[in-house]
Structures are given as structure tokens and as C-alpha cells.
Image 1: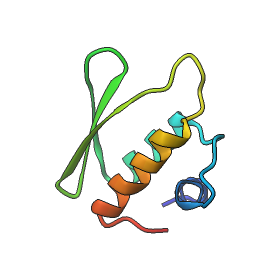
Image 2: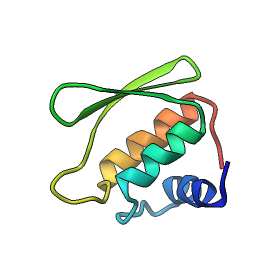
Image 3: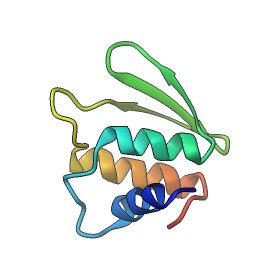
Length: 84
């Protein structure tokens, strides 16, 4: 995993929850971790990592992930066994 991916992973796990994490950086992190991403309807993205599956919505029109989605991503990564 690259240094940038490590920083994004740290940002996801930070408390209080940040509001400036770019969704594209999260997708790059997931790909680096070996996740399978597939497009759903509209802005949905299906993610499978370590036999854990989830569906997220890409943020739009902004590029930053909102706090609720970041908490959900943290929970997804914890269930998949990924920790900073």
C-alpha cells in the first residue's frame, strides 16, 4: 500500500469524523486493498472486500465524502478486517 493510501485510511479512522476526504481517494484505497468495485444504478458503487459486501453512493456534486458515509466506510473496513 502506498503512503497516500495509508493517509486516506488514517483519515477514515480519525475521530472526530473528517469532512474533507475525497471519494476518489477512498476508491483508490479500496482498489489497493484488493476490493472489487462495480457500478450500480445512478451513483451507486458496489464494493466487495474480504467476502464483505456493501453499496455506497458517490457524492455529487461535491467531491468530498460526507461524514455519514465516512462512518459507514469505517464500519465496512472494520468488518472486512482492515485497520490502520
